[in-house]
Every structure is written in structure tokens, then in C-alpha cells.
Length: 234
Image (cartoon, rainbow, N blue to C red):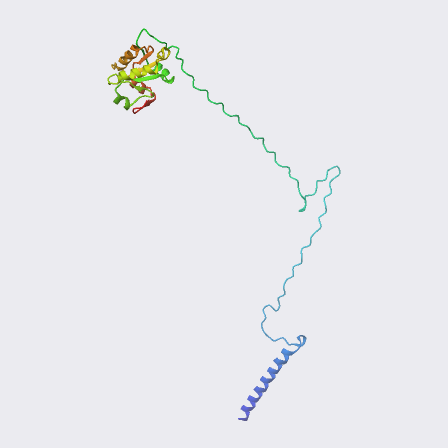
């Protein structure tokens, strides 16, 4: 019993002594403080100090004798003059010449012929007279005329009741002898169609003495791809 008590008192004294030693070491100055035994992995490592790079002075190049020294490169504060690029001179394009006006066909060969009621002509002469804006008269029936006719031609059907009125009105439009000598082209369906010849006879009977009959008629005009219109207007 006494031995056990003795051991407990001894252990308590030892613990008190250790505690006092720790407190005393904590409060001691840095140079008198004891290092505790333990594992410190970075205790033996010291940071490696890198020496700053040594800048070697560069000697200025000395030009050889007789050689011109090149100018030093410009510094950041210097302004370098740059010669602007030469702008090419603007090219002036001459305006294209205006197209020449179409040449008017020569109508000298279409002279008056008071001794005969009409002269038969083919496509080439008809085209020349059409290009010269000569008066064209369509002798077919109005219903056929409206289905297609030579552009600019007026309906003058010889089989309709108003044909005499139309001929008289045309005479009123051209009462002068000089006007009556202007060329007029009449046509029908060509071939065996005689309507254009009948109309030419009527016109000659009231002093129109420069009448031409398109002998091949409207089908030939279409075959040559001449200008055509439809409807009741020329």
C-alpha cells in the first residue's frame, strides 16, 4: 500500500517537474530556449539565392578608317520622318462618243407614178419604207387585223362598209398635191389575196399616185421577223 502510494506521488512530482520545465522554456529568452526533439523536414533546407545577372558593357563599334559611320538607331523619344508614298495620278477616262443616229433610208427611188395605180414591191423595199415612217394600210378584215398587223398600219378593209369614208378622210388629211405624192404601202395576206390591189385602185382614183403593194403581204413580214402589233390600234 505504501509502495503504490509512493509511486503515485513520484509520478505526480515528475509530471509537475516536466510541466514546470516546459513553462520555464517557453518564457525563457530566445538564445536560452531549448529546442524540442522532433521531426522538422524543412529544418535543414535553406533557400537558394540567385545572384543577379551581370550586365557586360558593350563597346561602341568604331568604324574603320575611310568608312562613313552609320547613324545610331532612333531612340524611343526620337521622331523618325517617313516620306509618304507617291500617289499614282488618277487616270481620266474620256467619255464614250455618242452613237451616231440611224441613217434614214433613201426614198429617191420611190417616185410618183401617176400613170399606174400601184407598184408591187418585196420585203427589202417594204422595210425601207417602214423605217422611213411611210403610211401603211392593212386591206384585210378588221377581225384579222386585230389578231396581228404590221406595226403602225391603219385598218382599211375593202370589204367593210366604212371603206369609202376612210378613203375620203385620208384625202382630207392630204389635200395638197405634194402630200398626195407621198408614198403609201398597202398589203393584205399575200399570195392570191387581191384586197391590197383593190384598195390601191381606190386610192389612185382620188389622186394618190404613189401607192405600193406589198405583194407577199403580212405572212412574209412575219417570216422576216418584222415589227408587229395586235389589237385595234396601229
